[in-house]
Length: 116
Length: 115
Image 1 (tube, chains in turn cyan, red):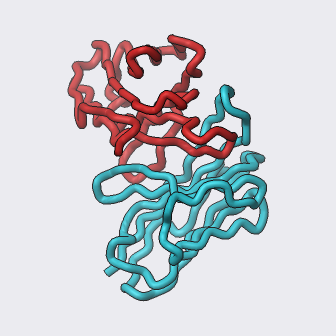
Image 2 (image 1 turned 90 degrees about the vertical axis):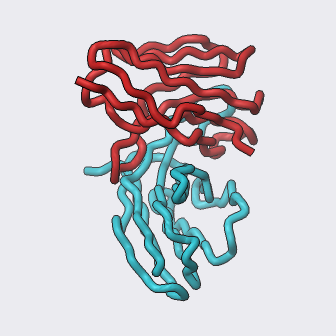
Image 3 (image 1 turned 90 degrees about the horizontal axis):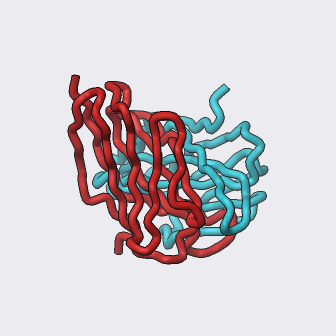
């Protein structure tokens, strides 16, 4: 009964391919995120969605397209994969709260993407 | 431009002693700070947090201190245990406002607890 689950955990694919990573949370949260951890171990936000609506898009290339069919799911589709896309992608979720209140973000286990 | 900085990539502490992990930030709009712990091949797990209106929060062996004027926070672990060996990420929220901000992370500090 993992709170935030993402699949696949490991993915090796060739340049130019299209791939998807799926994410589901069973915490009843209304906000979901995708984070990327690159080779320098820097963890950076890519997208956030609140109730299926895109809130944050951190200058991510158009080849990355998140899709949220409902507030419990946020999938990440990547077109025309490049070598530089190799990274660990973390899905996360939280409850939407206003500024000056805290919200804890819960992370999935990560998806290790290697583009060859 | 890093808005959250953890200047020590690694820290080695003897079991039973106090571990102190430091974090500095530059954005005065941050209103909430969190520490995450990460083991290899796993996702970050939430450890402890503090609101910008407080200067201390304690949870068992873990205490987070916030010095707003210095834009500095620290995580104290006492006593340190072997299971505490992990990478610790400092994170901050609130650069844009709103409840879907996401977090800005530091680069992490690898804590090693020696027996």
